[in-house]
Length: 74
Image (tube, rainbow, N blue to C red):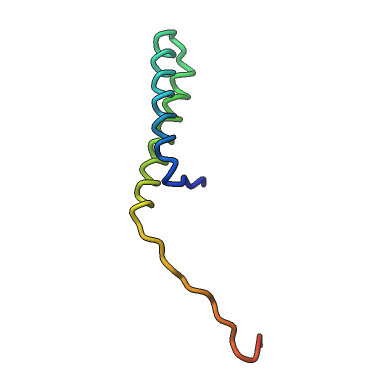
């Protein structure tokens, strides 16, 4: 699954604004298929934003560098 760089969260806001404008137009024109597609996209976009915000609050864990055992592999 695609992970969003937290620096790109503002771009997700721009995309959401555009999708909402497209949704308004689709509703006015009676484009039911487009409405459904836009709603699905909005749902995924919002989920991805929430996940990215949650991950941005979690500090990375340093797993360290694996060592080489003396004597080499068995």
